[in-house]
Each structure stands twice: as structure tokens, then as C-alpha cells.
Image (cartoon, rainbow, N blue to C red; front, side, top):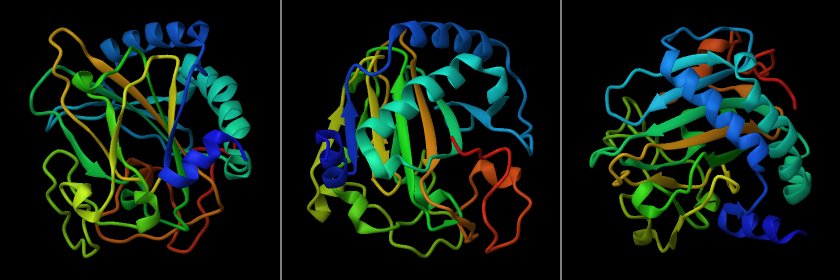
Length: 264
């Protein structure tokens, strides 16, 4: 067992240092900046993977670009992320089905905390086994909105889904919620500061949040790439309605398959 895998199994999150080379990240940064300046589309296509451009300001409209129109991100996923996952997580990363790509743009403001949440609570899937990768285009510190995790929380099952900005519970959500302070449930929390060459990987059940970006003139740009690690079926319930539900035309109990969710 690798040291990264041992940490991942214990904590539900692991930081992999110096695995993303600047020769890939620098072109990605340039292409992202051009797309972010020009993309206005909000429509979600049915039959291809997408990238969601999301600015962390309450009320901001999410914008959509096709992954095929973002070749530098495709390169990072195929040539860096997937080999790194398989080298470090072994059998846990044997099956990787692309689920979602999101770019979180966090401008400097006091009110753009992203509240405690777990990824799986927003996805109507069963089984709901996911791995998420998070990386950035710049050095990220606590003051710049680094991610914070509740270590070991992935062992506590699914929790309820809430607004990521306000913690308001979604309609008809009846599952127990993540507490405002996970330490009240005996969990330790850890902030992961990182560079553009590092990669966080977390279990889809792991609780995490990010505080505000407090640095004037700095925009934190975080990339999230999510994978499903087992065959899964559509299992809708209240409070679950991620963007990918607009890309499927299947009935409850049917397998999640299609060009929008390719096996990698």
C-alpha cells in the first residue's frame, strides 16, 4: 500500500505534491483566462462532457463550456491526473468514469465562504462512490481560500444537502446535516495549502469547505475533476440535482452511461 493510499483511507483526503508539471499547468492557465473572459453559454449539452465555470459569488450564473473545447484541461486529466491517481490509489482508481468538471473562481470578498458539504449528497446515484481531484493555478493559502477537510468524515455516511452559500437545507431533505463545526462530532479539521504543482484527492463522502479569499487583487482559481469508481444507477431523491442530471435521459434504476460520462 502506498503512503498516499494509506492517508486517503484514513483521512478521506490526501495531498499529492509536485505531480502537476508547469509545462501543462501554464498553458491551462492561459486557455482558462481566455475562456473565462469570453464564455457566456449557460446551456448544458446532452452527449459530451462539460466544464462548469462557477464564480463564488451568491447569485452568480454558472457558465458551461464543452470539454472538447478545453484541450489543455483534457491533457491535464489524461496525462497527469489519471496516471497519478492510478499510481497512488491503486485498485481504488482502477475504474474511473468522468462525472463532472468544475472551475471555482473565488474573487476577493468577505462573503464567499463555501460551506461544509460532501460531494455525494448532491448526486442522485447508487452506489455513490466517487473520487474528486482538486488543483489550482496559483499558490493557495488559508487567506486565499484554501480547502479545509474534516479528517475521517468519509466514514460517517451520507449527509443532507444544503445551499453551499447559506447552509439553507434543500426542500424535502431529511438526512442529518453536516454540523457547522465538525469538531463537535469529534473530528479534526485540516487546511491544505498548496501550489499549482500539487493535487488534492478526496473521497466523495469527505466533508470539506473553503473560506473567503481575503487577498485584494487575487482571484483563486480551483479546478475540480470528479470520477465515479463503480458502476452506478440513477437514484433520484429530494435535494439532489447536480448539473449532470440535465445530461441524462434514463429512468430510476438504470445505469449511468453515455458519451457525457466516459470511462477513462
